[in-house]
Length: 88
Image 1 (cartoon, rainbow, N blue to C red):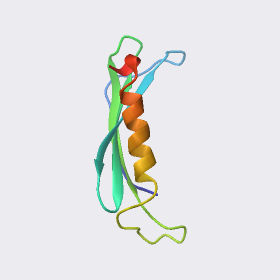
Image 2 (cartoon, rainbow, N blue to C red):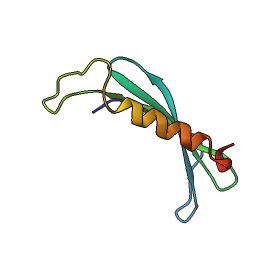
Image 3 (spheres, rainbow, N blue to C red):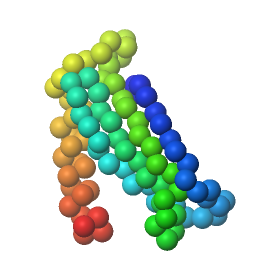
């Protein structure tokens, strides 16, 4: 579940404007994972930036510490994405 969120708006975006959301794995702890986000305009200008922190929890809401089965696939997927030519 989402534990914390922050967003700082830098410049407004227009209704029909194409935007690009860049997401980065920021940190991983025993009970959570954090992502950093940048929202860019068509020319690469920063429109907004922020972060989210997500806790690892069981379906009944109890925190799960370490070794969550979600982490390994996430890290491997992010590595593959970062290795693609368009992200180099």
